[in-house]
Image (cartoon, rainbow, N blue to C red; front, top):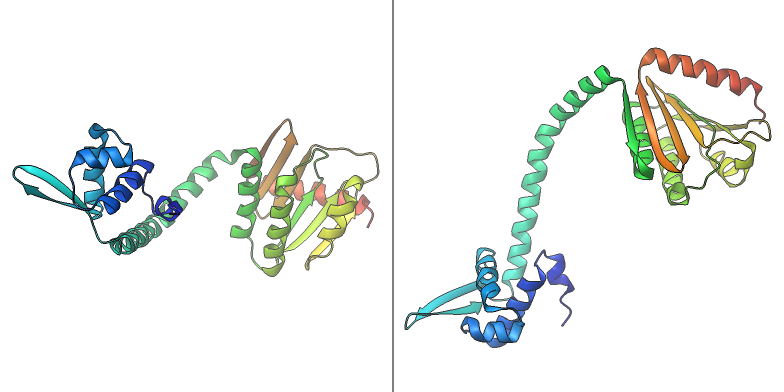
Length: 251
């Protein structure tokens, strides 16, 4: 029998062994359950209690001896529905506190003005912030591209710019010449996009993203991470640098 659905339901390996043993044995005591499931008697008691709380096991007492029985397998579907309902309730509760947490976070960010996101996932997290604060007609700048590979993010960047272009956000890419293929040519295909290139021979392991009141500096050399600076004056200054480089770049 394929027990993977039971794992996906959230049952532990011990719970699966004891439950399926009970299904096979019918009403019985802990001794046969332990033998059939190959779980020690001391652990069987604890597992049976957990299964009982899930409504998957019941018991009766005969002659001062406790006999256990697996619930109707249809109960598994009921248990799944209960878990789904509980998750929906958790989601509703989370949605009520997320706005307050975001306000607190923004207040804290305003005080600190800078954050560091570690790893390639951190690079992704930092990039996602742009789509939350920009709207149709806004623009962002991406200056430079790391020489070191980050193949795991290539598919993400493509998907990101698909969403970005659908939101009507303009992106000006200023790439290193070595990124013309495939990054430059593929980036130019997205709507609301323009690509230019810096002179040949310029190699960087970092890049800049400028949008709204934010500057993100991404590094992919040895250790990957992003530094996000949220300050309108700083963003305006970096935008001036970007426009200066843009005017010197070639299409």
